[in-house]
Length: 293
Image (tube, rainbow, N blue to C red; front, side, top):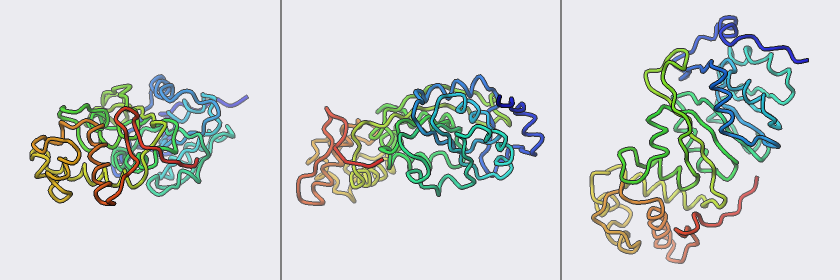
């Protein structure tokens, strides 16, 4: 019989695991909440799970309570690695001491893959963008962010939070805000509220060239969001590009839908290559792009 793990506060005290601001750490110790977060990622059967920044292991315990095929926990803090060691009594758990920004997920765990994580606040957005660029590798991602970031991921057009992150996320995934959490849910309490987002990659994903072009367009469009698109996109073709895409050059970036950004990106690629580009159809979300694993 597997030994019952020690209470999380006892684990923190034993391993001197006080949260470090430099690592963006805010620990979630309520096991009812961690179990709830894990359920957002279901089903787990035959899936391999990646957790980033497990800290003392509250969410880790919830994930091990599922029928996941394996759990790989990537942690930069050596104190947490030691604190988590007793959980390796479950042979499905593997601890990896590494910076999550430098791991190769495809080589680290097999498909089908899930990512479930209370992300360190200081690396959450860069990690998300890197994963969106290879969304085809994941079945689902259930991630906790600062509430402001979560709102930006899930925002609809013509709302204050809608911007580059929403377009990149929703081009590749279905984005859902699943749970909001107050600062008091964490130890130590952060200065901001938090939220859990579930990202389910679309069955057909855009290729790397399309995503690179989309990033260029959104950087230009939202970099000067108060300007009309004909001015903001001037380095990429301005009014000529917008006319070719059938978009009014007097509009602003926050008014464009995901489908319209798709058409705009396709048009930019077509003009750059001077040949037809197989790309998104607004009625079928994304251009075919074969991927492995």
